[in-house]
Image 1: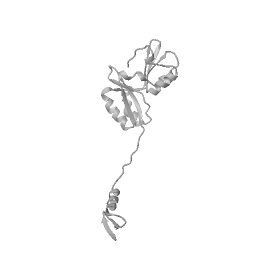
Image 2: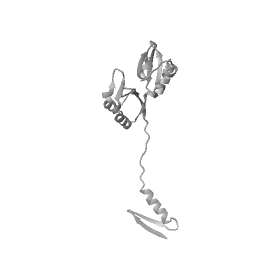
Image 3: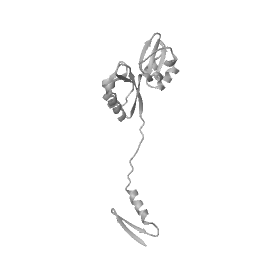
Image 4: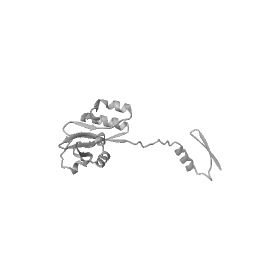
Length: 172
């Protein structure tokens, strides 16, 4: 026995012996399901270091998208090759960077040690300096705050010592 069903502009001829009515209902429900496309975007992590008692965050990052750099230009210190963002602006900057696939990681002053290395002054440190956010001299040494932990590891390979393994007291 054949049954003709008309629904939403479609005409179905169904044999009750072969296909029960509930199968027709299932196929009608499935046809109205719309799948949204999904994708995973890689983000670049940026460590922004809070400078104690300065109400300021500093970070170093090369932005290959000119419009991203233009948005942040007012906070760029071209002599230090880093961004210096007032603490009251960091939420807005973090939101902007998130929209452009950058993940801003705020590092408080008491958590910078894994990023800090020490190297004796007047030794080759150009590659270390290039990947640092901040540097300063203390006695016979230069202290570097590196962009990320990988940069700190590379600095160790180039003869630097972890701040934790030195007798130097330092706080950003």
